[in-house]
Amino acid sequence: MIKCAICGKLLKTITPNHLKSHWINIQTYRVLFPNAPLRSEETKQIISRGLKGKPKSEEHKAKLTERNRARANNPEWIEKITKAQRERRKREAQFSSSTISTNPPSAISSSV
Image (tube, rainbow, N blue to C red; front, top):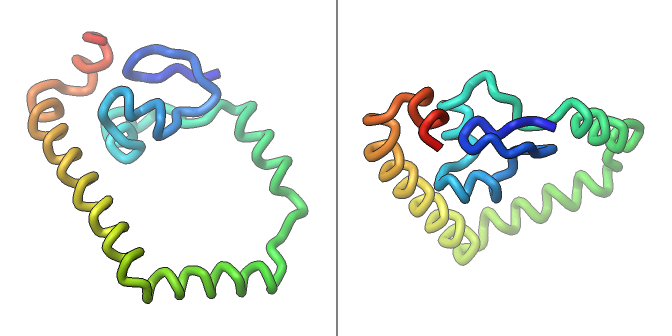
């Protein structure tokens, strides 16, 4: 188990959903706490064991490529992704201007 550097909760993995409760994302967490792990060693081993010996077939790779190309040419998909990116950047800018500039990481972790 690892400890969230913000709230101190013990978790197997620091997930995007957990970080939403702190109004940040993984990228911001990494900037604030560059040495904090995102996954426990046990979780890393489980994931590694599950992926070993399971290479993607050429058929599977072709399906993924086809799906990604279809999405890249779909205006609705592009708009959805663009909107989500704009909203995320807006939230990050609000967070960084209100919290990061006034509170160093040590103050954030000790005040929660």
